[in-house]
Every structure is written in structure tokens, then in C-alpha cells.
Length: 292
Image 1 (tube, rainbow, N blue to C red):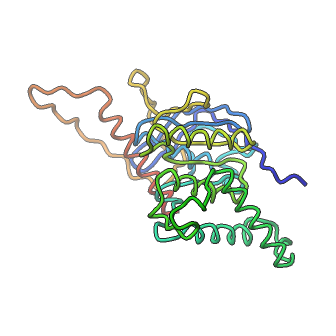
Image 2: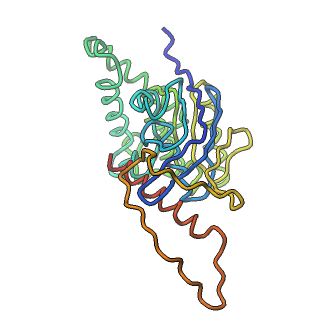
Image 3: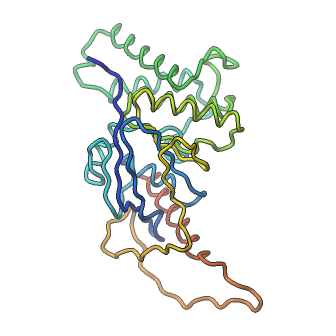
């Protein structure tokens, strides 16, 4: 039986996530085939990470509809989580700086062996289980382009001693051990040089070409990606959220207050209050996901 992962198609229409203080993002549409490279582009605070978490079944949507690998969201969130994996999502799934590369790999392989496969697999001889785990780890490292032999202390190198690109590759490798149909990567190009950014996208492009759908948050998307933007255009105001819409977290009571008066000689920037509320909504929704 072929164990090569088959990518998950991603489709969404009018998708939105709302936190206690407002919308994290709204009106997102996506159409991507299996094995696509999908880039979530937008400014910080625009709900990029919330969208990533929503599409991997880890944050409940409040508006619109979506299907990942044929599974509907938010109805099939648990099933979507089972076929997706996260790579470096701060506050949700991130590397422990005190762990070595070997410790991270061993822990993930152990978790995969115990909880990521059929129960009957635990009945196989220990030698077979170890060989299978080693094969998964080796394949994941190769796909992520991380050669432990090139690290300062090999597999005994601590995460805190890794370069940013090396840490990104390790995080991707850990996610790939479970052979997901969709790999979600946060902050793909953060703090990377131009050359490192090219290498990171080449890695993700290779994973997509091999069949795994890749969903990556970035500040600037490559031209060959399916681009999804969470940025709000000032000329397209968002509709007010409906009170009965289910939310990602508990809602605070609606409050009304008189508009603040502008000081003499000052002029309010268009969309400033709206953008601030959008950032607050994204932060609240993300905080709720971290506590879940």
C-alpha cells in the first residue's frame, strides 16, 4: 500500500472568525487543488494565523463555509485536525528552545506511534515499530531539507542554537512525521534574509510538488502560489457581525459609546478604528485557540 500523502483540496467561501472584541478576518474565499502551495498574505494583526488555524480545524469559524480534503468546517473540525499538521505556530505549536533536535524528533515519533496510527500497529514487534519510526523521521528530515550532520552538534544541537531557517526546517520535519495531507506553516518568511527566504519557499514548493498541500503565512507571497489575503481594503467596509453567529470564543456584551471628539487641528485617518478592532479581534481569537 502506497503511504505517500495525498494533498487535501481547500475550498472556502465568505469565511470569517470572530473574537470577543470583533472579527479576526471576514469574507475570505479560497479555491485550491490538492498539492497546491497556498500563501496567506497580509499585514501583522490582520488575522493570518487565525485563518491558518481555522483551515486546520483548530479554530471555529463564525461565518461562511469551508471544506478541507472533502471535510466540512466547522462541522468536521476533529477530522480535519487528523489530516493536517502545524509547523511553528507561536503560542499553539512551537519548538522548545531547551530541547535538542534528537529529543524533538524522538518525542514526535513516539507520539505518532502511540496516537497517530491504528491500534493494531502497536501489536507489531518492537523492531518493526522502531524501523517504521526511523523511516518516517528520515523521510521527514529529507523532505524538509534538514541534515543533522551539518548542525554544530549534530542531533544533540539545542533548538536555541539553530539558525532561523534551520529551526523552520526542523519544525516542518516534525509536522511531516505524521504524513499530513495539509501542512500549515506560520511566519514563513519572518526574520529571514532574501536568500533564506528563497530556500524556505523552495522547500515548501517541493513538498507541494510531492503531493502535500501547503498552507503558509507570509508577508509577501511568491508569484506561483495561490494567494489569499486577509488585508482589508478601505474602500470595501465589512458588514456588522450578526449577533447569533457562533464564535471562536465567549463574546463580551456589546457596548456603545459616544464618538470621541477629534482634537483641534487633527484629522482621523480613514479606517484606523476599524483596523484596530480587526487586530483586537484577531488577538482575542488567537488567545482563545491557545487556551483550548
